[in-house]
Image (cartoon, rainbow, N blue to C red):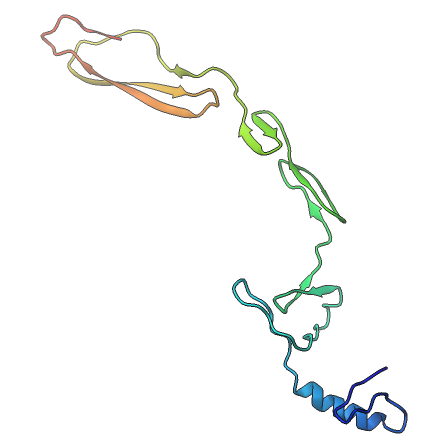
Length: 163
């Protein structure tokens, strides 16, 4: 083991080991721990912080903290692939109602756009308003409008058909 000392003693021997060790302890006590980097500031050099018990399989990050190594990536619901080593890829699973391309995930069309609800004519004999529960959807099944409200003819009007 080569230890650099303040008095240029280069190697530890049985006769000077205690002296070298004492000098190293003094040097070591005067060196700060490394300063971790942040998103906006560079870190600083220094001694590596000692890992605590149980951190034996962790790595030292640039921010100066010990972190566990990721041992695997598991694909969750709607995803495929994953892995435990090397470059891992997780893909979006294509299925009913979902369309997947190289750079996009979208809803697949499921039918024609349209308006759904009562379609027959209603005959009424009083004035006021009448709401017909209708839902209009696009080709993806998304609701784009709902409920149509009609103003009914007055009681003196003979045209009582609402379309």
